[in-house]
Amino acid sequence: MRALKRYQRFFLLLLAGMAAGGFALNTRVNPWRVTPTPWTSQKLEPYRAIQITWNRTSKAGLVRSGTWDAAMFGSSRVDIALDPAHPVFDGMRCANLGLNAGLLVENHAMFRYFIEREDPRLVILAIDAGDLSTPPPKVNNTDFPLSPLDPAGNPLERELRYRVGISTMAASFATVGRSIKGQPAEHSPQGFRLNTPFPENQRVQISSLYLSTTYRMVMARRAHGRLSEEKIALVEDIIAACREKNARPVIFFTPNHALFQLAYRELGDPDPYFAKDRRALAGLAAKANAAAPAAPPVEVWDFLDGHPLNSPPLPPADQPGSHLDGWIDLFHAPPDIGRLMLDRLNGPGSYGERLTPENIDARVEQVRAQLDAYATRHPDDLAFLRKSLAKFQSAPLK
Image 1 (tube, rainbow, N blue to C red):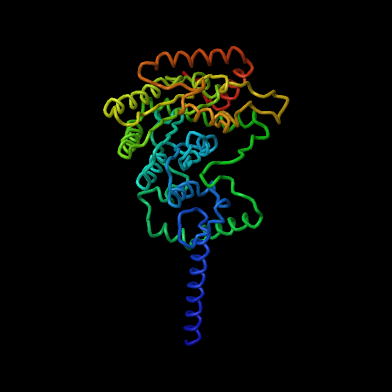
Image 2 (tube, rainbow, N blue to C red):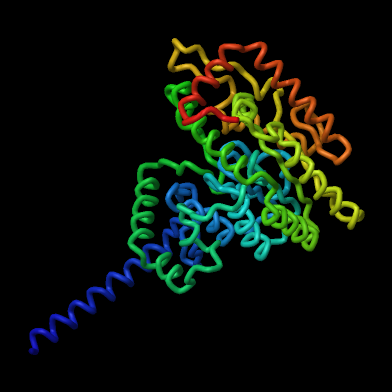
């Protein structure tokens, strides 16, 4: 009996020691930036990763561990393309809070988490094509439920995981390992993904992963058939919160390659040029600006069109190592294009157009003409698009 008690005591002491050691390691390393303490190492900052499996947690950690004057919200398009060190943020500390595969519902949660802790001067919200016109997803397969962003999560369980959890310890060891090797993390300390590689065979990836995703997006829009009132309300809430903090609110309608846009027409989308989405965004901005003319105006910049930067031809089929000029795939523009998007906030440039309720019809006609011109110039690309989409269609679309 005494031996059993000694064993139990030893085991409990061992567990307590392991928990204390884990706590010391995790709070010292703070791999996801969610447990800032006076003893957290600042030298490890360049080596803290924004892991794909802990993406929401890590981006929320940027908010917890920093003080920010500006922030950018959106999907991986923001994460990859928009550099928080751009001159438009001169004099401001800006965080890139773009979430991998992040839609508006999660971006709103990230924004609320940010705005409740910061007093920003500039907020950029990037909205992807089709997001406003599809319902919120019923299932979330990311780390959102485990992150500080989920109001329904158990805060005690969450905070224990960040301090003594095995997953956090694994991230801590990985962070220390990168530090020893002198290998900075994939993201900058401001949350910007660095050096996103081009795929080895871009045509194959486009014809499979990206066009199958596009097909599902169009089917979801066709099934829903209208703008999401819930998502419109989320954008309104973001604008209102910016007004309360006297922050400059900017909305980007993000770019996609011309083939992505043509796929909507090929698949019979009822609004293939996103006229409803554009009109809704312009209307929200006009309504807010009319209600508070002395406040920083809400701006809506539209980059979804057939501009030459958005419509380079596909790489030759016999050159698998080549890629679209300036595009990682049909969805993701690189930082060179992101730089031009941010340039527009200071005025200059021909890339993108500011939307108002008065110019929507003309803008839609312009986009239609640009995409028609692309299809005419590159008939082989259009044939590639049709052949690729046919693989995902079980029956002819009506």
